[in-house]
Amino acid sequence: MKKVKDCCYKVVKKTNGSVSCLNILGSEQMEKVKDWNYKVVEKIGQGVFGEVYKCLNLETGKKVAIKMINIQNEPEGVPSYLIAGVSLLKELEHDNIVRLLDVLTSGRYVYLVFEYLDLDLGSFIRKHTATSIRPHIKTILSQILVGLAYYHSHNILHGDLQPSNVLIDLKSKKVKLADFGLTTSFGVPHIEYSYNEVGSPYKAPESRIRSSVYSTPHDVWAVGCIFAEMVSGNPLFPCGKKDHLSLIVRYLEDMINNLFICYWQDLAEQLLGLGLEPPGVELLSQMLYLDPDLRVTANGALLHRYLRHAEDIRIAETVPLKLPSSNKPSFSQKVSEGRF
Amino acid sequence: LESCECECDGTSFYKTKEECEEAAIICLDKELSYMPEPGYVEYLDKSNNLPHFRFRAVQWLIKSRSRLNLSFGTFFNAANYLDRFISMHQFHEWKYWMVELVSVACLSIASKFNDTSSPSLHEIQMEELDYSFQSSTIRRMELTLLQSLGWRLGCITTYSYVELLLTNFDSFEFHLHNELTTLV
Image 1 (spheres, helix red, strand yellow):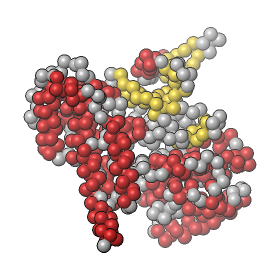
Image 2 (cartoon, chains in turn green, red; image 1 turned 45 degrees about the vertical axis):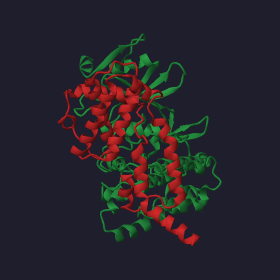
Image 3 (cartoon, chains in turn yellow, green; image 1 turned 180 degrees about the horizontal axis):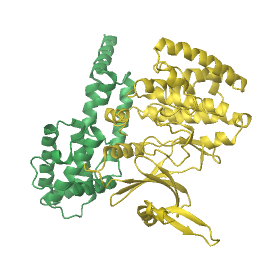
Image 4 (cartoon, chains in turn cyan, red; image 1 turned 90 degrees about the vertical axis):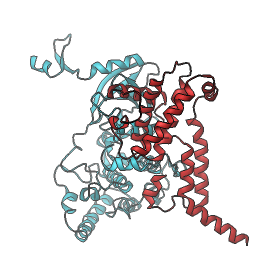
């Protein structure tokens, strides 16, 4: 147990005699949030840019996620990813996107306060069977697409769409997208999705060929993967066992197309067998189109006949807002360079 | 809108006249929320040294923009941050070193927000400053500035309109030509 102490863990003896360990690393800086009326509940994630804690707003009783970012060792002042990222997040306001509620600073730390929901789509899928999840698929899919269309209309790429980054509020039946760079590892089990060597199983094939290429079709591909996962209950391209796509994309494009058509036919039959309606299969095929230029856009997907009767489609909200300020080349460049 | 030029390879970003007008309306609408606090001009008029300090700071921003080869948008944004920050601290006893420190932070933040690559804090301070500040001091100033501005950095400035007109010059000309021909 002594050793445990050296590794920044605090040994806590409980009244019943059992012993548990608490990670106290970073918690000292988190004490600061008390001054702003937040109570730390638990640490829920550790990303590249900082630690994420689940907290309680003592005034409103609402749960929030606070991301703590240390900028102590930044020789060039406040890092540009933080400046560009936070100012963009500040401009975003949409029902299907997790809100940045507040930005607090203290000394060398910046605290980003995000809206928090307890349930993510990954857990939601695991809790349901193929039949019990079916009535929810259209609503969830359309809300993901509405949120994504909003991002894309502001020239923002999500970049890391996966079930664990899709949060669900059961009461209001709202689906909200979390993450995108700044909120990496938003307090959810990443174990089965984090395979650094091969990348996320939700990554579009073109990103594996030319890693610098990054654009909106990329996100749509990921939504396609999520869509298929909701239908089948399993990741479409599980990285762990056999990474179909990584293998496939090494060959020439013709080869890719031929192989993918075979693969696709199998998959389509499988999903039809699982009860997905033919229009759903059609939409999925448009989202998983290998050529990113021909892949359907988020707005295009929303207009597909499969989602015609889905609830909560608010296409009107996603009318592209083309603004000089929300249209930064530097930002998209930063995204493509992986700096954000 | 360098962005438009980049993404559309120099062609006009707004495809229709309506889209362009809509963008201008949104700009006008948004601009108001990026203004200095009310009474700023009167405050500048009343104070003894501040107009001079501000003039020098803006001059330094202009020179630094060209020396560091930053975008024009960066300069206009930095000047906007400077005015907004000073206007928020109207009861402050402003000294010149303070204005200088704020301008360094403004330029640094504007560049990090706007440009693909930003100069180092050392490079920013290389010329024409009376004072020299440590990185940690500038970082603290940056944080104070960001907090004061509410991290709202995508301001609409005079230059936003110039960009809007310039990048859409082709389509303006086209629409104008069309309208004239229909008249004839």
